[in-house]
Image 1 (cartoon, rainbow, N blue to C red):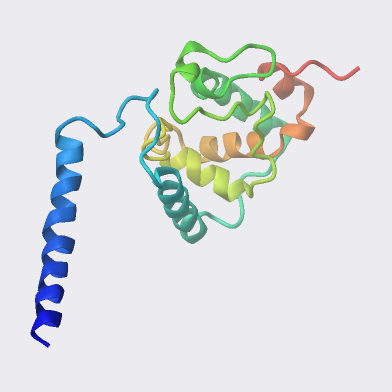
Image 2: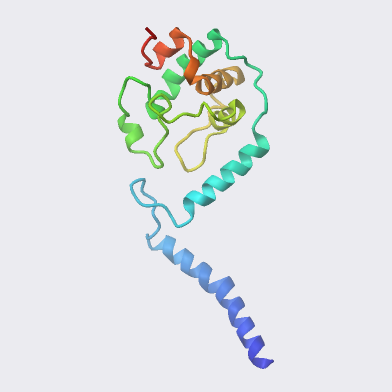
Length: 175
């Protein structure tokens, strides 16, 4: 019985003091991958993705107060071109130097990385709140709620954009 308590106390010491000390040393002595070109921490992507999905499922609006009309999609394309394209690109141009240097790589919405299958409320949430540790800023302080929804509608409807909106994001006119 005495041996059990010795092992138990040793386990508590290791669990509460030694492991955290190793973690602090790992970070303090510069072993942690902090450069965008460095490989991720073990479990980093899983932790970040799990937390993001849980938060979005709890907070993302179910319905959009802004309809995907031609007028709103064109307005969303103008905002996208001005504020989003530098990272997320447009159809007819290659990835920018900024996008190439980011980690994780930002999705290129008009070059194959689609969010059209995401509910519009999820896209709205990401635009409004940003995504920590990805370079995705929150636009809630810079754009109005209507503008946030216009961009979300644009991204949710990439397959059926009106010609004026398609032109703004570099999609060739249908023949």
